[in-house]
Length: 316
Image 1 (cartoon, rainbow, N blue to C red):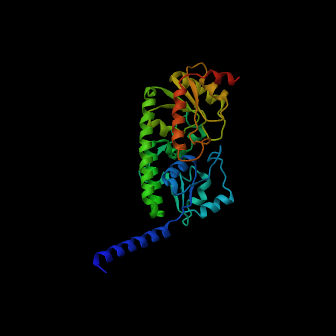
Image 2: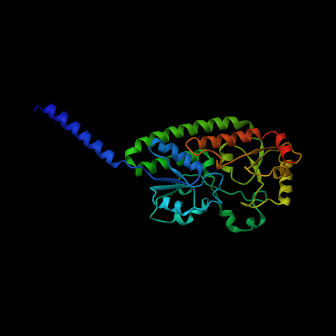
Image 3: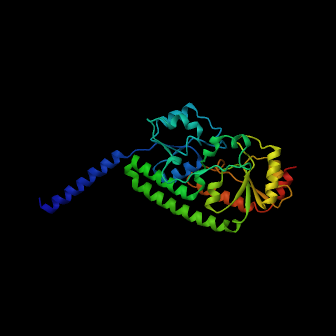
């Protein structure tokens, strides 16, 4: 047999063996995510290699979500669990310190921006202001800052590539495309919100400062001072005074807020109102939901600049 023919056959055979090996090493990753914004990003990076599971579904918030035995079993059998922090998804506290599980907390990753909660009477109740530990608490709504989101995407890509090297090029390609889309959306939102940089807002609770800082917006107080606690008449009256004094143009509430609460703050001011869902609770899970989430928040703030007469009538 001629040397060049032998070399060709040997090369083809070697390539075939490598391909067989690659096929044998391919695995269907079992990936678990906590909340919809994270599920969306992981879905985008995984692409057609698989579909991550979502723990917190429907209109439930992480604050009230309770794990079922089946959820514990899924996590125990998963290759990786992506979540924000055991201080945010408190239902994962018992799992976070389990060394036998592969859990990725994004809030604990290098270079992720973390802001402390704002501390004054328009942001916190008096008993929390008097608690020294309150001033150490960190706001964990980190996905609302696009620069954090891009870091999260890279962490997802690196983790998946390490677990599944065969598909690493797919994860890298998908992550790069996703990051480009995130940059493009960020620039679009920045241009849309540029006229509102001198405006002030009041938010339902202190969950939007990452978004505010990213897009040069300003909030001057929160309606709800503690999670799952109805705001007092005294606090709403104080906020109404803030709205009048600070020329507030927008009151942002969350889905399900009774109109009377927003009206108590708006009063006779020129402020409008908007409904924002920072968790994307009512969005369809999937690769597009993060972009829909950011778009809907932006549109709500833009629409919020004028009083909604239908809303006013619906409050009667």
